Image (tube, rainbow, N blue to C red; front, top):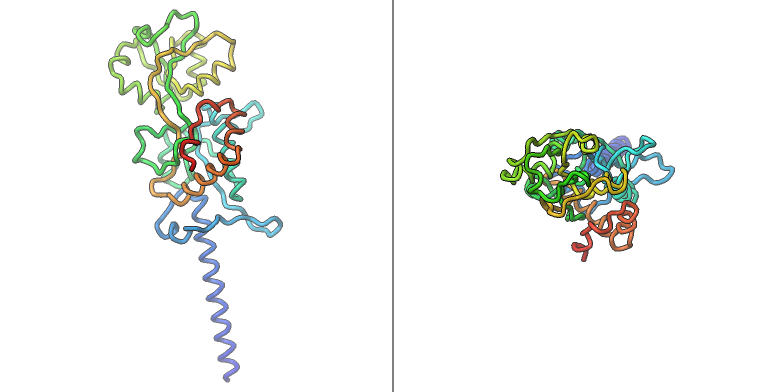
Length: 295
C-alpha cells in the first residue's frame, strides 16, 4: 500500500513540474509576436531571451511582425521581384537574426496602423514613422533618423519658394507627417488652389510628372528616392523646408519589454558598424542620428 501511495505522489509531482515548465514557455513566447503586452507577461519576460529555436530541435522561433506602408521607398516597398524591401525592413531583419526571431513583413493601410497595433496584428510600426506630435501615443525607440518634410516641384515650373505655391495644386499623402505639417500652417495651405490627398506617394509623384499637380509635400528621403528613379534634373526640392522631424520605431503604449529588446539590438548594431553599413546600402547615411543615443 505504501508503494502505491509513493508512486501516486511521484506521478503528481511530475505532472506539476511539466505544467509549470509549459506555463513559463507560453509566457515567454507571448512576449514577442502578439503585439500586446500585459503586466503579467512583462514581469515573466523580464530579463529573459525570446524563445530561440535550436537548429534541429523542432522548435519554432518567435515571430516579430513589422507593420509598414508597402509604398514608402526607401524605407519599405515592393521591389521589381515582388519582394518587400527597404531600409527599415533591412534593420528589422538584422534585429530578428540576432535574436533568433522570424521576421514577418506585414503591409498595412497607413490609415489603419493604430488599429493593427492595438489588435495585436503587428508588434510595431517601423516605416519612416514620425515621432513628433505622437510622443505620448506609443512606446518609442530612440530616434534613428533625422527627417524633413519638403516640397518637390518640376525644375521648369518656375516655383522657387513656398511663396510661389500660392494658387497651385499641392499633393500630399493621407495621414502623413507632411499633411500634419500643412495643417499646422494654415496661412501657407490657405494660399494653395487645392490640397489633394493621395493614398501613396508613388501616385502623387506620377501626377506631378504628368502635370496634374504642381508640387508634392513629402519626406525628404522619399523625395530623393523618387527623384533618383526618374530623369535626372527633372525635379527639384525647394530650399525652404516645410518642417523637420525624427523617425522612431513605435510599439504599443506600455510595451517597454519588446521595445528594449529591439532598441538594445540596434545599439549593438551601431557599435559593431552594422547599422552604418545598412544605412550606406540605402544611401541614408547622412540622415541617421541613432549614434547620438548610444553610450
